[in-house]
Image 1 (tube, rainbow, N blue to C red):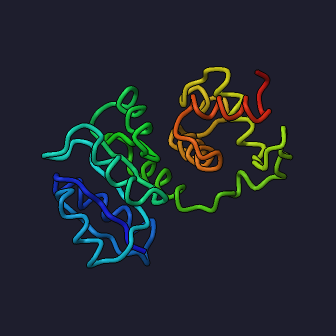
Image 2: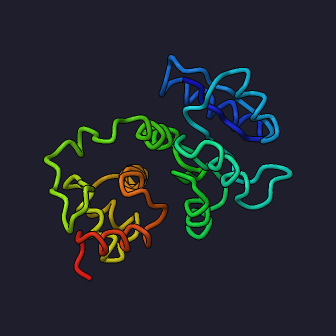
Length: 204
C-alpha cells in the first residue's frame, strides 16, 4: 500500500506523513513537495492507495490538481487538506472529485479518524445493518444510515447539523457522505438528491 502526501510545506508534509504511518503502519508513505514529482514517484514506489493533497500548491491553478489526479486514478481516495476554511472551497473541491476536505487547523485525532474512515469497508460497524430493498426497479441498496443521510440532505441540513443530530463529529459525517456518494456514483449533495428522487428513495 502506497500513500502519497503532496504539500510544499515541509513541517506539514512530515506531520501528515507521520499521521498516515500511524493509521496504516504497514504502508509506504511517500512525501512530495511538488505535483510534478507525482508520476515519477508512483513509478518508483507503486500504485497509489490514497492521495493527501495541499490545495494551494505552487504552480497549480485552482482545483486543477484534483481534476488531473482523479482523471488518472478515479477510484483512489483523494483528501484535500487546506488552510482555507471549508464552505465554498470545500464544495468546489468535492465537485472537482475530492473525497474529503479537511482544514489544516483540525486536530490530529480528527484528521486521523476522517482519513482512517476511508480505509474501512463499505459497510463499517456503524453501517453494518440490514440493507434496504431496492425500489423503482433499481439495483441500488442502501444501509439504514445511508437512507437516513439522504433524508437529512433533503431537509437541507449542513454537515454540522447532521453531526449534532447524530451525535458524531463533522468529519465522521463527511466519511459517511463519501461512502454514500461512492455507492450512488455521484459527486455532490445535489446529485445525490436527484438520484434519490429518480430511483424512488425520496418522493418527487
